[in-house]
Length: 100
Image 1 (cartoon, rainbow, N blue to C red):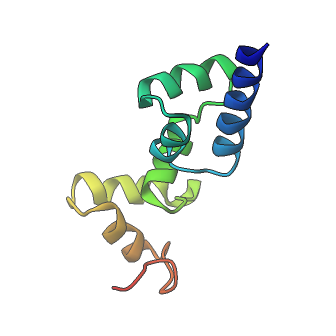
Image 2 (image 1 turned 180 degrees about the horizontal axis):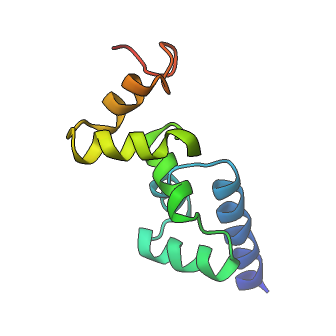
């Protein structure tokens, strides 16, 4: 019975963490497990992030569809970093860019 409660609590922490867009390392730390174990559990629960959502989470901003080609052109041909591309395209405001 105790293992069942532990499993339910684990599921709740994983689902809440993914819903609140917490970093995976933080969720794994709460559970006391490895990142790989967390990803397997999340996959079984069906709450993994899509590759696009994961990339947006890592970048910290959303690239609109109509600017996506320009963004990738700057990244590849211009060899700019993600945040530099976002500033050039006007995707970052002064508030969201941090203390730059």
